[in-house]
Amino acid sequence: MGEQPSAKSNKAAKGASAKPAGAKAASAKPTSAKPAGSTGAGRPKTAKPESRLAMVRRARRINRELADVYPYAHPELDFRDPFELLVATVLSAQTTDLRVNQTTPALFAKYPTPEDMAAAVPEELEEVIRPTGFFRAKARSLIGLSTALRDRYDGEVPGTLKDLVTLPGVGRKTANVVLGNAFGVPGLTVDTHFGRLVRRWKWTDQEDPEKVEAEIAAIFPKSEWTMLSHRIIFHGRRVCHSRKPACGACPIAHLCPSYGEGETDPEKARKLLKYEMGGYPGQRLSPPPDYPGKPAPPLGTPAGAE
Image 1 (cartoon, rainbow, N blue to C red):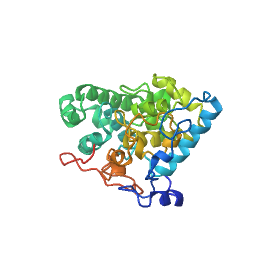
Image 2 (cartoon, rainbow, N blue to C red; image 1 turned 180 degrees about the vertical axis):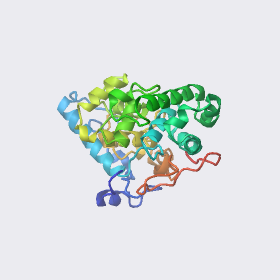
Image 3 (tube, one colour; image 1 turned 90 degrees about the vertical axis):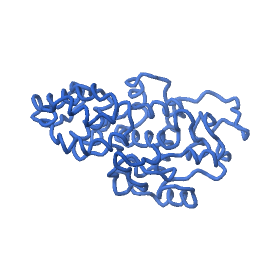
Image 4 (cartoon, one colour; image 1 turned 135 degrees about the vertical axis):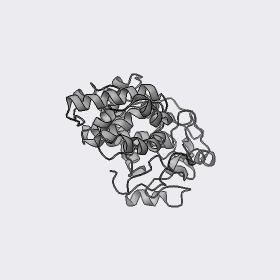
């Protein structure tokens, strides 16, 4: 789904520790690339508040640079059709995509169609999806949405936001994932990673996902929404973590107004990198051909970096 790595990004990645091909590596001395508005010692200096125009330009530059860092960004759920993506996205609530991907092979072998899942014995379905957590509530949602697909949509996943959000367990976030990645309809996926990063980057101060979605949608052309979501989520999972972001290994530190919230020492920061950025397996058992990391292991085997 992602574009091929550029010559620019390949050059930047040369010599980086445990970096995937095509990913822009952090400088050996990231302190030389301080965010605008900071001193060499990392202390913010007095500056005029950033204008709306300047923020939009900085936001779009971050998107361009993330495209160089993650030219292979993609949805990290394994799926072969819209129904599988819909089910996997519902299962991904309150767990990792890795755990979902390790669970869905057995799930879709047993219930390959909406008709099959609608007829499932709840206790049997619960047992299959138990590894994803909250399995009773998720089983109710899966049976409910499968029944709706069977009875109202001839067993097909609808391709509009209006219809998708009427399905049990499906909100705007899930609907946008399905629309963007199964139907090619642009959408923003405002998950916890997306919300955290856009607030750190001062693109918005909103907490409500729908308000976040509206404000970010106003910054970028619609054609960028789906890939922007993948790039931000990739960066949040690999570098800009919730509790301890790897600031010293961040390739966009020079554009980040929150630089310094995490580890700034380059060596220590590199040890915080996850998935392919840290040399570990990714989240998909069946990643896209251009993914430079290792496939995730099946359920029941060591997962590496989760």
